[in-house]
Length: 68
Image (cartoon, rainbow, N blue to C red; front, side, top):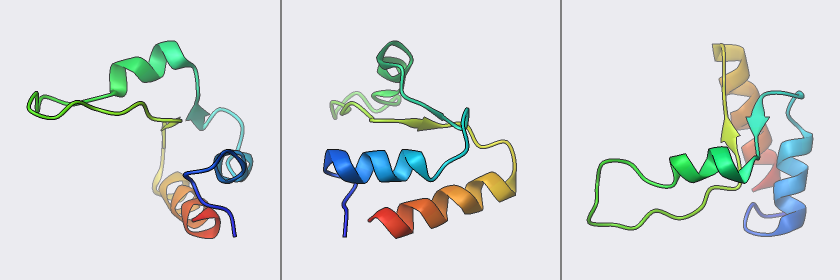
């Protein structure tokens, strides 16, 4: 089974999503590294999901479950 922590798992997760639902551009992802909590340094996300509906959220959760 793949894990999101490895490259194959990340590719499998992104491959399970429709085109345009996930953003992987490092310039965009950089602004999502952290929130207002400044006590903890944020990590770099590998993707940003821009769900537009509850169906998109369900699809993302299924893909995340399937790929670990």
